[in-house]
Structure formats: C-alpha cells, structure tokens
Image (cartoon, rainbow, N blue to C red; front, side, top):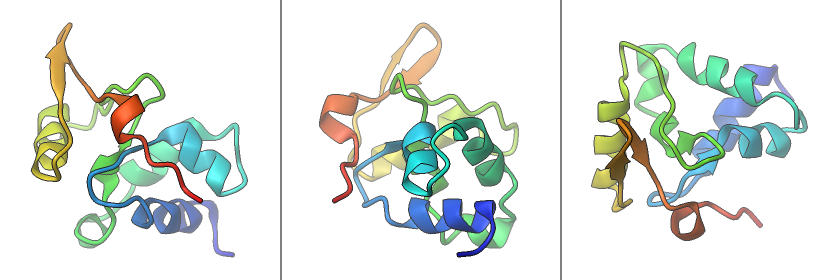
Length: 108
C-alpha cells in the first residue's frame, strides 16, 4: 500500500478534528513502530498542496509537546491551528503543550 510517506499521509488524514496523535502512534498505525522520526520527516516533506488536505498540525510528540522546528511552519502556527480546532494549548518552558489524556486520538 504505497510508500512510507503515502502511508503516513493516509494515517494523518484519519485524525479527527479536535484530536491529536503522536509521531510514534502514526508510525505504529502504518506498521513501522520504530519510525517516529521518519513520520516527522514525511510531514516536513509535504508540499504546499498537501498541506491543505492533510492535517499535519494534529501530530505532536509523545510528551504532548509541539516539537516542530520547521521555519516554514513554526510551533506558533501549529498551536494556532490546533486552538482553532478546539484543542487547549498550554505554553510553558517556551513550548506549547497539549493534554494527551484529553485530546489524544484513540483509533478503533
């Protein structure tokens, strides 16, 4: 079923509005449980057209922190997009945090 990046994009499209998933969770869902970092690379590699159709902002690190270092889509942008979906963001220690107990997607 497609290459790794395509499988990442298909999995990320399934994350519902108002929920987040972790890089590791996406990696496990596509059958590559030790590839969390590659999930991040796949999301970073998306071109502008895909950004509109794939909710990249819904993927965060396993601690519940927005961990992007992309200059084109900085943490502030990701936090703003998540807040627009109704996800509460807490800023502490110069980082943006999401309560995983409340907002983590649990696929069936």
